[in-house]
Amino acid sequence: MHLACLSRSFFLAALLFSLSAANLVAGQSQGPKAADLVQDGQLINLQEPKYKALFQELEQQHHFRPEELRQIFHGQKISKKVLELMDRPWEAKPYYKYFPLFLTPQNIQTGKEKLWQYREVLDRVEQQFGVDREFIVAIWGVETRYGTNQGDFKVLPTLNTLFDAYPKRSDFFREQLVHFLLLCKENGIDPQTIKGSYAGAFGQTQFIPSSFRAFAVSFDGNQQKDVWNSVPDVLASIANYIKKHGWVLNAPVYAELGSKLQNGRLTEAMDKGWKKGRVPWQLVREMQQANLPPSPGNRPLSIVGLELDPQQSPQAFRYIAGYPNFQAITEWNHSNRYAMAVVELAEKLAKP
Image (tube, rainbow, N blue to C red; front, side, top):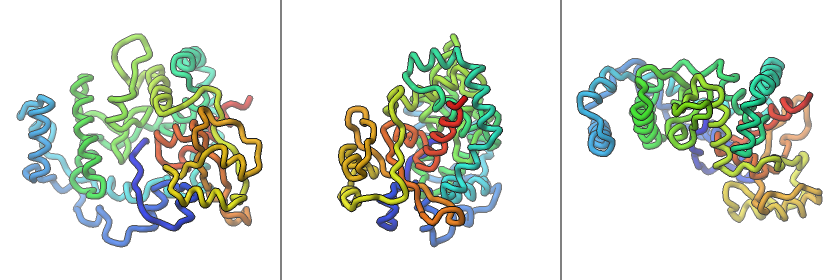
């Protein structure tokens, strides 16, 4: 799934390593969790001002009828499990525990089979969108095990739960709830029927509603954008998303920097506030004294620290330089751990 990053203060090392926001969240919460403040299954109060304002917007700006909204929202209840899962996302695991969840022999073998099975579709997707096929299929594999695990949470009550009872991201999920109702209206879908993740992502792509409306495409010869059942639509929609976020065909994705940052000037550059922990490519190459491949358009590189298993390595981190293609994956999901798992799965899929 692809949610907005939460900015938080943390140790300077976290800034330098450009670790995922989920990692920061895990170590900071001191007060009660959102799930502690509700009862599972409690009815949502639709008379609250925030719901009245939501209904007014849906009626006046998006032309929903009052009776239509009553049918959609009647009996909506809080899911405590959704709130519990939001407070402990998978991306909060250290990398040495995170990537084995996806780089399984089965996931690799199935991915290779999908590359062959859909090779003609992928030929067309690569040509039209300019995204390397192994990375498209790797995202598909990480998100839903190639469509076999699309989620068991009904999206409508999930988004209502997060809008109503997850205060730190209530505004975001209100926006997603509106997008969800609009995409259902635009595509003739009953909003009560769609299932997805605990964060409101759905389909084989695990798009959140705003991403579906912005990036989903039809690629199977009809006009319907079907990320649930149409593999051509799924593959093209993934490609369209990361292409729009800066992917360059056949360009480098990352470079190894070893277990130590070799020069304090990288630390200094990060400390000066380079956007999203990104450092000029020329500086990274100079300071690492490495023959790093050029960055497309000389765009900055991310410096990423990936946690190593302390029982297997005396070093705490494996450092990489993330190229714009790596950064395009982090626009899909803002976790660097997620992006590297996708990259390493893609590498496995590309091998004979």
